[in-house]
Image (cartoon, rainbow, N blue to C red; front, side):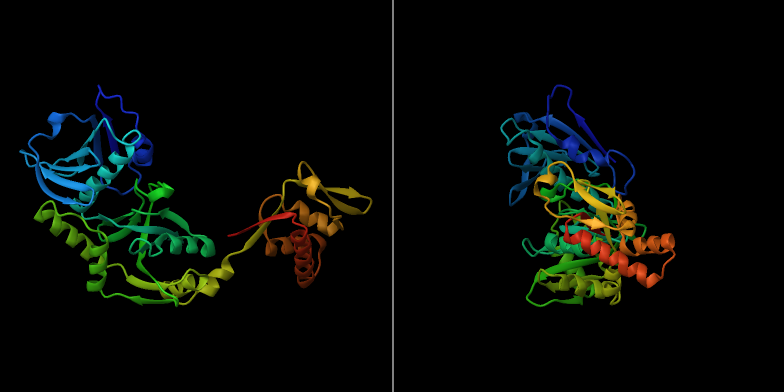
Length: 375
């Protein structure tokens, strides 16, 4: 559970609360973390000793052996247990300081995770049938692209687009959402068992190979650098990623941007069952809300309403069976269920019911009368 406390004399209007709000309860598996936000004063940073500068971050130590990190003029102080962080917002920062505070807190929480046997991983996390799959790789490799292909072709959920956490709960490894999810800002306090970690490499041909535990550990380490504030932190981080590398299968996926890339990986993870999985996805249909059906004698005509009437020029007529099927499509429903309903209602042969249902849906689709989803 995350806690955020603002100094009483500090009128901070940043949006950090919104970013962390889903984590203000104990529903997930993330280790707890307390955050205090202050205005930066010159005296706050006096006596700091620089340990190292890496990119936009500078790491310090104060006289009491607390760890400090600075980013874009703002500062963060960590206690020795890494479960509390003080953020100091400078007067001259972009916008309201939320950007700087968020990046500093992300660095701080990496140490909190490592200190509890877990870690954050730069990846796009998908969820397929309660299995977490993490797509990792260098910037521009196509992590989010591959995650979105799984979303498009297999209707996966996305757990996090940038910085999910890997949580080791007594030997069971989970993919977990975090307050940091890239530009998409998909913030979810949810977790699922981790099925696999995938390192994406762009290629004109699709192939997948499983990495050895040593190769897997090397990939995780190199792609998720955590500055070792102490030797203890370094050992804890290596221990955390080793436990995952020895437990969870890690693969290298050479791939293009196509359904074949999805199929190649899916068949490796789920024993060559991609075609079966696709067959289980049923197309569902629903009549568009901007049309209604009206009976004229023994026939039924489709009437457009509202703005749709301006562009609709077709004359669409159905018989009684068509009207029956239309009436069943106020909510999304699949073709097989419609055919079964038609068979039961009119006591007709199964094959005839399927044929008539398909003809009805084809006519509906050709005249753009239905919405479709695949589930």
